[in-house]
Image 1 (cartoon, rainbow, N blue to C red):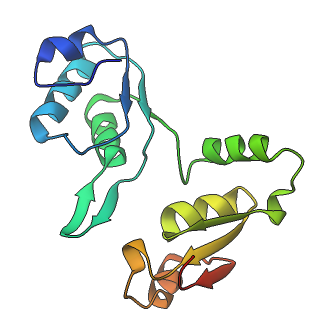
Image 2 (cartoon, helix red, strand yellow):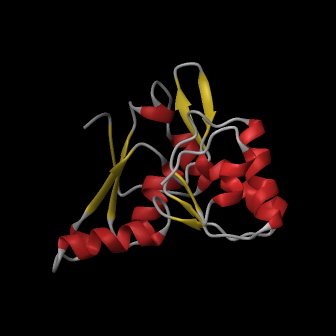
Length: 157
C-alpha cells in the first residue's frame, strides 16, 4: 500500500484505491484521482462510506463524499464497506455465530448509518442522543422527517 500524495505518477501506478480517511485529502488530490480513474478504470474500495462527519468546527467531508463524486465524474462503481451497507452487518453476523439478528442491537449516534443499517440487517437499534450529530438536539424532528425510527433511544452509553 502507498499513501496517495501530490504526485500524479503515484496515482497512475496504482492498481486500485482504498479510501479510508479524508483527513489529508484535498481538491487537488481528488482531481488527480478523478483523472487517473477516467484514464484507466481500476477498483475503488471505500472503508469509510460516511459523506460527512460532525467535528468541533462543523461538518467535515469524508471518503463517501469523495467516492460518490468520483463515481459521478468517471462512471466507476466504488465498493462501499461500512454502515449502512449490508456487508459490514454480514461480517458481524458471521462473528456472532448462531446469535439471532433480532437478539442483537446496533448502537450508534446516527440515523442514516447506524440505525438504518442495523434495522436493514434485522438488528434491534439503539440511538444514542447526546453524542455525535445529535448532541444537544431534540432528535424527534429528525426521526419524523427521515422516517428512520430506532428501536430504542438512550441519552448516552
